[in-house]
Length: 454
Image (cartoon, rainbow, N blue to C red; front, top):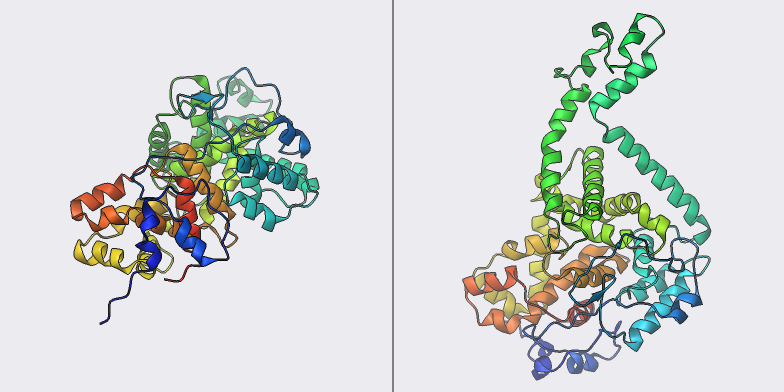
């Protein structure tokens, strides 16, 4: 059998050159591809920091909902410091002219009466500058939560938020509260009135399904006790969510309220989706959404971030929900098949590396790719870099999965020299603790894998 030749661009000497500061959309000339690839990920991290919008950019266009003029900062600081050099939770750093220009274009696009989704996706796929609530608004549009017609935003938001409030009232209520409400609604002015102050029902009025010791399938108490195990798992995972970030952890009232919001969303989702319920790791996918929406500069949107996050979480997970269903693991929509697709993608673009990993050293891609794929790379990079990656994932019109696989493949290619020189142990250690890398360059390589022939 003739061994497949490694593409020239993989062995090009320019791999040791400095990577571009940001990746372009697509170069029509493939020669630029050979000239513009950069270094192995052993280089220092140069992730792109979010920027504070300039006054000119903020005043150029101000959509009424949810992009708005930045209000006075609330007494309780919302934004979480992602680094020691942060200002109001934003990573310090100079804003490139490209970032400022793209932010202005995004704000201009968001100010239109009807959003051009194609243009919005194109701009967002290159990374969304963190200014004027742009990322919050853009993500809601990319996930289909906001309609393209801005005139419908207010009514749609009100409807969805009211629906989520109803979900919470129906699904999060303790059975004892349900019993008290039932008692109040059915009590009369006869002898049963004396029980109103104690919140108790007469024995004759407590149905079998409402009794705490009932084991019936329709018993609200039986269902409550069955759900307690999932509630406890959710509570444990929520408390472990990004423990290094004050936004999610700590003893402050603010952190506790954010944890409570994550807990509510996951419990409501589990009860509305009995086929999946809750799977460990969903909290890691939920966290970036809630963080972005809770940091919306529009005070009303920030206050109601829990409801907005719930619906966007449902939409995001709809493209990956089969990965969380153990019964589908071996099906064509399960996680193992998706990992196999990643393996084939690597073989297509770099057969030498694929052969070394899976045949020579026998590193099963499940050992590292399972977490990469199921958690959407939230655990492989720092939080701010994860947001930039998600900008690209959510911008793909065909859904985030194919883009996710290309990014995973690019992650392998960027450290190919270290992988080719390693054995089973060193390779596994490297891929399970992925090194710091230039996120813009990673996304640039992933983008080139879309069209580059092997």
